[in-house]
Image (tube, rainbow, N blue to C red; front, side, top):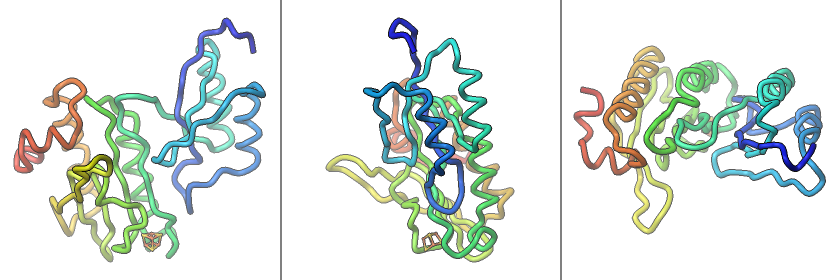
Length: 205
Ligand code: SF4
């Protein structure tokens, strides 16, 4: 790869599954697009940042996808869903629901990077209480939390917004919250500040 080629940063991971894992085929595919001195950045949100040549981005992302890697934009977008390891099984912990939420929201443009986390039981390994939006499966239903803030001296635990949601109610509510934030949030306003400014009631109308 020549040094004069314009490069762009993208986020990749192995998609939603039993733990945030990568297999050897995925690692080999990623390394094809790295020079010896290049580095991969591991983020706190189960993503790797890699720089790829901008003029080949479509074919590279296709190749990544063909080995099961998921690709997302970097910047002010909804991050891919952070999840727990689904230790009690795919169905019991709602992995299909987590995949559907991710499909609906990841990569949407928002005023500031938005972190959404999912956890399959109240033990909460996916740390939903420390994310902007947190989802916790409670037996057959879902609880929704908002306003968690993991960083800073003023870190805060999110609070319960709605409970006993069905999967459909959950999808609709999460999408609605993100739509309200993208339409009425100020440029570069974090979700935490946005929520303080407008109040929880305005979030879901
Ligand atoms: S949150 Fe519950 S289901 Fe998910 S990995 Fe932790 S203990 Fe297992």
